[in-house]
Length: 134
Image (cartoon, rainbow, N blue to C red; front, side, top):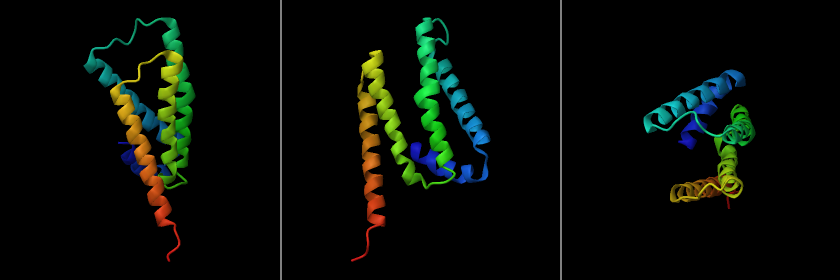
């Protein structure tokens, strides 16, 4: 999904202002997440105030800054160069585990390993494409 997002975003972002682009991307993501919450039956409200504060910090901190900078960069750099932005997902998972006591489940570990494998393969392919011919 991330690769598709980067490749599609690269084409669209070249022709679209960053503010319009992130409004569409974040709006679509928000609608999708609301749909998932509704389908899962989880509540939107009823959490302690500290939880809402942490949600806000997550949205303004790592989520907004990493995705906004990646979306900006899509207008200027090829998608393989943006692969390192996915370190943010791994970092956020580690911080959530250490600071918030979130359990590190099998899916998070599997996803992290897949992200690291993708970064490695992309870096290896990039290096091969730029090695001098012998």
